[in-house]
Length: 144
Image (tube, rainbow, N blue to C red; front, top):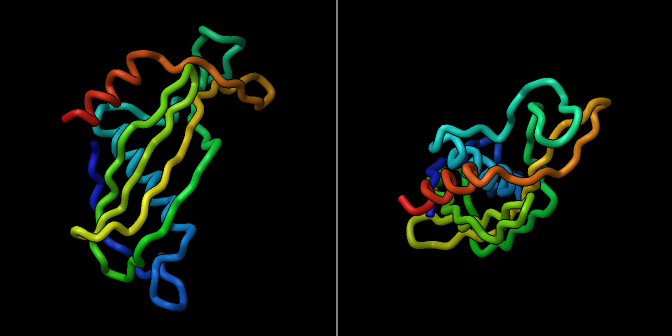
């Protein structure tokens, strides 16, 4: 499990003083990006579009599924953590499972599924196989 700590900023709250529902997806994405950085990886590799698989090009990880179940509110200045674990992994996708905690209180849990894609000439994208070394490095960080 990887843990990412954060504090609620005022701009993330709604008129009721609670974190707006859409912000929880940003928190999950921030935790995922922090995990990648912790092992020296980046979710965006820039480079010229590839002419086909196996050639150098830009790789990205767009989201293809996202959900979140709310249990308790977060408010301005609350300190919390996002606990991230790797769920299902396929040839080209990773499911990230997240639990948001404020102390011992479960704020909610959700998951985001990302797909590894290569950028193609003309601006298109196509799914591609995830390099085994990427999965190994991410799993190593989760087991630390």
